[in-house]
Amino acid sequence: MFGIKELCSVCQKEIQLNEEVWVRMKYPSKKSMTEIKAFLHQEAQFVCMDCFEETKK
Image 1 (tube, one colour):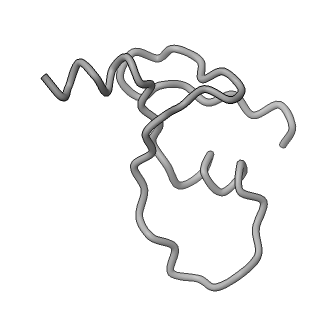
Image 2 (cartoon, one colour; image 1 turned 60 degrees about the horizontal axis):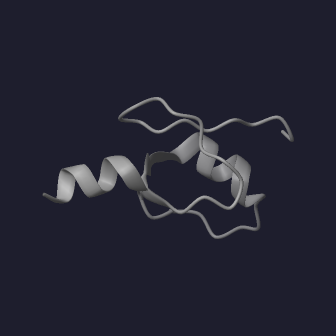
C-alpha cells in the first residue's frame, strides 16, 4: 500500500508527491472510514495539471 504509484490517465506521467492534480471519480456509495490513497488508487482517474490545461483550451 505504501508503494502505490499513480499515473496521469492522459500522458502516463507519474504523479509526484504534493503535485496538484484533477481527479475524476464516482461519489462513494458506502459510509466508512478508509485509507484515502488506497481508495483513490482503486476508484479514481488522475489528470496532471499540464494535461488538464491542454484540454481546457
